[in-house]
Amino acid sequence: MTIVVVGDAGLDVVARHVGPIPHGGDVRANVTIEPGGAGANTAAWLAECGAQPVLVARVGADSAGRQVHAELTAAGVRCAFAVDQEAATCCVVCLVDPQGQRSMLADRGANARFSPADLDPGLLADATHLHLSGYVLLDASSRPAALAALAAAHEAGLTTSVDPQASVLLDLDPEGFLNDVRGVDFLMPNAEELIALTGSADPAAAKALLDVVGTVVVTSGADGASWVDQDEIVSVPAELVECVDSTGAGDAFDAGFLAAWQRGVSKREALLGGIRASARAVTLVGPQPSITR
Image (cartoon, rainbow, N blue to C red; front, top):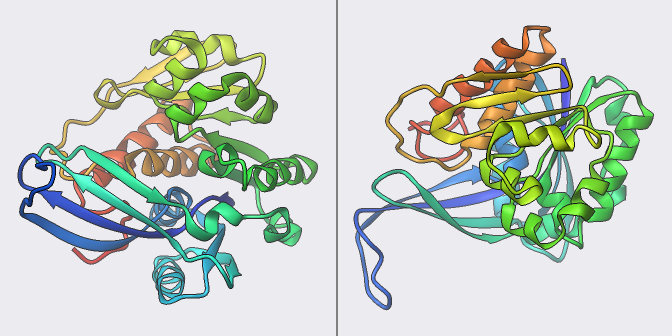
């Protein structure tokens, strides 16, 4: 069950601060450095969920890139990385408040220079599915590579999924985004991204997108998740857990959902697979399951 993930890989500097951050002042924090990047997070959780992930990304020729490669490989991810001799590996500063909610300062680094040549078509020969992180598609510099990856997957007969990832960017050109993802099997927005695409957070609003994609899988935080297709809407509740760090929860959901769906389970069980992975993710510091904590 090989799943090719196309998306960002890098390092997250996770700062869990103990109170409000004063402008121009100081606040105590617990700071760790973890492998991150939306694509890498999903790939790591796919391995945790029993799938065989291949991660296609671009990293810098630096120690950060080597660390990311080593840690993901140890976690069971096959890394198909292009190495950029000029740009640094992606780095994201994640500010996590006492409630576990995160704000991010992102530098995509080498990932922003991801090109169509970075995807080896041979990787698709033994794969069954391609999952695309929306950051690759929504950034103008890497968008051609995202489109090329989706086209190659369709040509090879793979099923496909796209997580939009960034509602702010969707607000700029929702119609353009939908044109880019036309024909994918699963569009996987969260509630904010669904608002950007339809004007509503109600999962039923996703019905309007079914002339573009096969199925919409909506994550709604504490309200759970929903599968929306032409036949029905299936919803499941969230798991009640203590949120330590919400970074990567959506990436973990994608992995849990796709790993379960590929095993041929019901719509409800596929959603619950995603819910279980995301619930575990928010109880951990950092976005991936492979870190020793």
